[in-house]
Length: 189
Image (cartoon, rainbow, N blue to C red; front, side):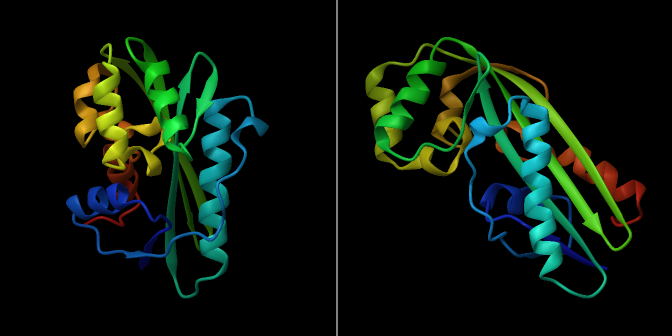
């Protein structure tokens, strides 16, 4: 069966490679939506990951499994998407500084004859961040393709004091749950 990762995320690609899956990447053509349209974070990641998976599934052929994911950061009920400007990135990071937040990821699978959704939620606590470290992080350009404006796998790792839950979920792909599903369906050997 053809396995397609419907994502342009280098982190999701790296994590799927780590578990030995033979796959191809076809990024979805859907655009990031106004995330204020839905209130519940778990429902939002389900909706967004489904939309990505369905779009790629509908423009591909042959027997295939499409895997799509979406990750959001939630602080005090407010969704922090990918920052669009340096000032927005700074606002996100200063907001998260010294506090906790949640990271939600939804993963949607569509194949010939079936669909499945899984999700993960991880709590993350940030250290108090000095302004100059936030400014340095923004200058290297790291915040702009990541929900909440940081990556736990890069320099943003120093922001994190502790997490409760799945580390890989904070990277945007709860790979253990993904592997478990693929294994149970017989798609991982």
